[in-house]
Length: 72
Image (cartoon, rainbow, N blue to C red; front, side, top):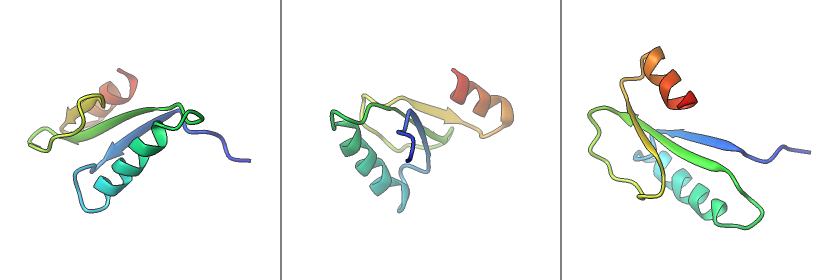
């Protein structure tokens, strides 16, 4: 039996593969049975926009920046 998702971080959510994955996760999160938190990691220089209700962490992908994004 698989464990339900609890925390999901998407890297590349504005790309060709990431965008449809983000859309699918947003739809899945709306289902009553699937409660998980979703966040997006994107480059510091990115100008992509995302839904307002999803936290976006701009990062340079250094270890300290990623630790901050993953652990708050």
